[in-house]
Length: 155
Image (cartoon, rainbow, N blue to C red):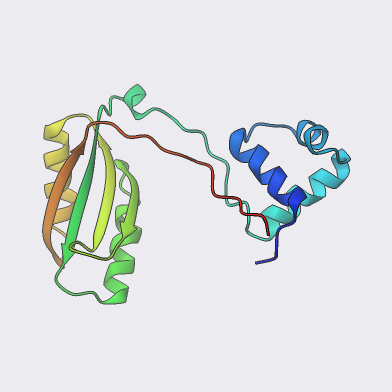
């Protein structure tokens, strides 16, 4: 990945704060021509620095009022099985994210569900029944706060 200069970092900072900013607004904020700003943003996408722009939707609007973490352990850690597991579970609509981790568990999955019955059904039907899963522990999340801003470290 290429080194980022101060202008790139400033563009990224602005986009992380508000991904809906127009090129013209960004150009004005950083003191660069709109055409140059557009080219820089295009290069950030092309180089894989910018990975996506997403709408953050409240799951409660769809009736998903409960969040939980599923801590999952595997019998064996064969790479192909772990990769397949991660690919498959991230396709489950209730799954927000899945993390391959070190420590007591192998994977932690963040889910949004309607209620505890939905959580129980999801755990039994989609996780504990999978080959290789030996244990699952569930923790309900009372509250969470998230941050979308990546640390932008200048040289």
